[in-house]
Length: 354
Image 1 (cartoon, rainbow, N blue to C red):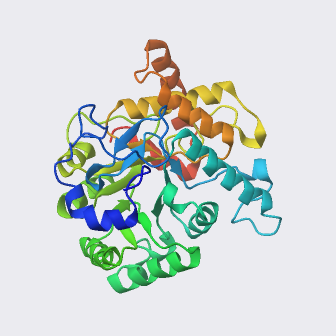
Image 2 (cartoon, helix red, strand yellow):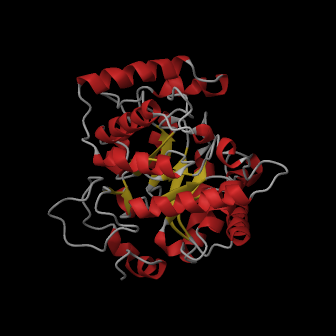
């Protein structure tokens, strides 16, 4: 086993034993036996156990989205026309800086994101964990809700991206309402096949439907990871929380939309190359709040600049609990954020108690 952690071959050889005897806590216990260093290890980064996967992921990971990147690069992968050179350069440099500061997981959830990050990771794939969802060929579309088609879609995506394997196949499900249980049975059947071939190491699902997610992780123990919104305004419900089931089933959690698609920010969070100390502080406060709940393994903000990477890494280094002044500042910003959400993001208001 290398210093950088388990290889795919190590995983396939040791996978059955990896989930046995691991503590239920997300964080690595101080008295735990010595283990291989996490990928991209940096002593200034915190690493947390991603549930029963056994993977140690950075306390803040990298979401696949790159909203507003055009204001920096002049282009985006999904923009017609234009020179994509600056876009590709940006993605390569941001991934490189993420590695430098100890961020070790990228979540890619569309064809464009997968192809972009596969390109950015070329020649260094083993240095970063990768989450994979070619959502256009998954459960959001009825024609893909069977095991045969799911395997076909996965294999085609892997081939197009030039990837040998992914760390987490994190299938995108219907947002609300959730898919039928038979659809998840199809996912599990498809995963069994691609997992046996060494193409996907772990299985996860993404959904905005909390009651459905709770039911699914209780019903299907093969689900090791979930992705669901947890924003600067979110808190853990005192009773009947999704995280009661998460803890009982030892499931890892990536929190999506930590900044509510940028609605938290006052000045655009660095769009156009402008650096705002106010927005930087709000981003760090939001991440510290999310991590302090102990519910989410890692929030996964989209990062479009080197400065944003450095800022989220700084948030992990700062003291975790917000003081009274910081709490008031974040609460005011979160209230404004919820009031100013774009119409297509009003549903985030339903995620204040999770």
